[in-house]
Length: 205
Image (tube, rainbow, N blue to C red; front, top):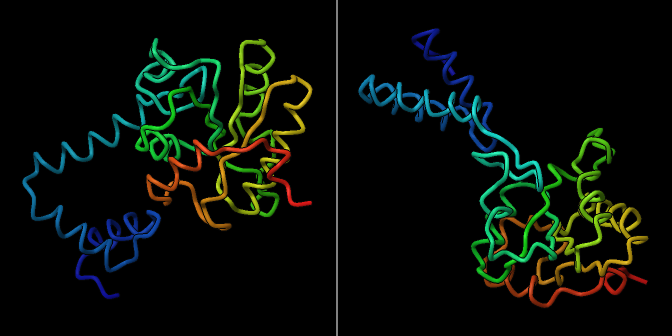
């Protein structure tokens, strides 16, 4: 792609680093911003800077939050004895949209993936073990994507948690293997939460 401006080229290059954004889409976005008033563009860029500088992770569940304790963990009506373990914040949002889960969450921050160099120590797993060790948890739901990485992480988490004698369940496989949790429709995801099964029952014999 030939550019008439080095500034334009640099901006397109940065936008094209975003997931799912090719050069043509990046160019369209950059030209759109160029047609906006400077005040609007400044507000856009300052919002991103503020996000990066001020965003926090909940000290309890590791979810993205404006405060040290996220609004879900702080909500008095949530069932603190029921923990749903997910990969990242997108999965929290997906499950919340179903209006079928009223417990709290634990965000791992990824999945175990040896091919990508991601091991258990790279995830927020020790925090989950600490929560389980307190003795006040009545059930842990492992709501991870039906992928090879998801199943690897499920197996590892079950090994770490089984000695606490806490019921461990996994969402029903209404979601096809290889499917990402965040892309499941709300009805399917909601039913998968409701019809969850003990983890041992989900393992293929």
